[in-house]
Amino acid sequence: MKTILVCGVWAAVMLRPAAADPVALDATNPHYFRFQGKTVALITSGEHYGAVLNGEFNFRRYLEALAANKLNYTRLFGGSYIEVPGQSFGILRNDLAPAAGRFIAPWESRNGKLDLARWNAAYFARLHDFLGEAARRGIVVELTLFSSHYGEAQWKLSPFNPANNVSGTEAIDWKKLHTLENGNILEYQEQYTRKLVREANSFDNVVFEIQNEPWSDRPEFVDVVNPYLPGAARNKYPNSVEVADALSLAWQARVAEWITSEEARLPRKHLIAQNYCNFRFAVRRLVPGVSVVNFHYAYPEAVRLNYGLGKALSYDETGFLGSDDDAYRKQAWNFMLSGGSVFDNLDYSFSPGHEDGSDPGPNGPGGGSARLRGELRVLREFLDGFALADLHPDANAVKHAAGASARVLSHAGHEYAIYLDGNSPAQIQWNLPSGVYSAEWVDTTSGAVLKTEQLTGHDLLSAPEFMNGIALRLRRLGR
Image 1 (spheres, rainbow, N blue to C red):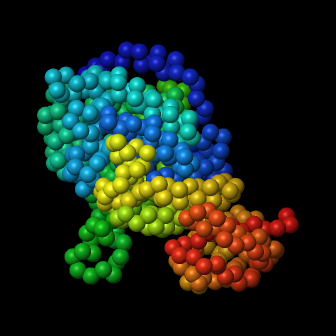
Image 2 (tube, one colour):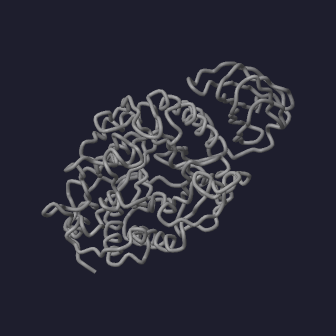
Image 3 (cartoon, rainbow, N blue to C red):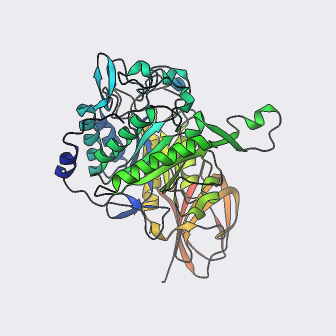
């Protein structure tokens, strides 16, 4: 194995100020997190993952925009993958596609190419700054180490492509990049992983994700969303459910082992996330050491099917439904009120030069706006109003919700968090323990309390007028 210069690494780790315990699964209810002394769910509408590696992006303005709406999560790609400016996925102003000369890579550049044996001090200074600024604002950072490459266009930009480095990486089929059959690239992937793990160890707000969308480059077909769809489209995206194949899983397990073995020698131990599939699927097998299960473009059923795992269940990316903010708000409420742990919208109103989230768009396949971030704040504050560690999905409290679909979290007999997806009129039939309950109807766009009333455990309750969803807070009185 080639030697990498690591001068000052241990000194830097030891000299950084001591941090609190890292974000962890809540000991009482592992579907939520314990972070900075509180039990929390993680909710955001964030930039396209290039905040550190894109030299044109002012990440302080970005983090301020999240904190202004009490959003407490963001994803960050580590630098092993970038995209093509103005082309990849139809994103015109793409944080993850730095302009020529603005890619701040983890490795030093020599003669216009990367030297995978030498670390870039400027990158790690920027990474430390980002993680520290996020921690001070109470924002958890999912640090994604690797990503699928999706096609030749992204592979041509990859640091591991032999055309882009002076380190003699082997020419391989790019679809084997994230397998154990990738030649001498594996040793550079290990060195990169261990380096990022060391550099992030002193921060309390980091979760390591192994790989973004591993099924994209290494797919194994396992299910369909709509089994009644006729014709050839039935088994194809966007109706197909695919997971990563065996070669990918073996490589992912190796990366997880690099993380855990490196942290075994370090003061703090961080959570590891595995990106499992799009949509929903009953998880068959997780990589050892994984505590957070990530789904993209998820259905609430992803929670129902996997709640028994006792892991955090994350809606880790959405944002391909056009510019209608209502769609993403409804996704968030449906997923989180089903027992989800994380909701993360891909917000295209963040771009270089518009780090406050003011890009007027259109800027890609999704939306995002100050309005949406304000509405997600309503969800965050609604959940924060409950003793989260006591809440679990409750399929019995609502017997029937005429005109709407009900999602319920409860501490049965004590308090209930309810979301009705639909439009009024809507009437609820209850199946609650005997007693008297206070009811507050909450506007999911503004947070305003629309109506307050009382009910007994079996009363019918009619919702006030609403469009595209309404929330309800129930608390038992007299106990």
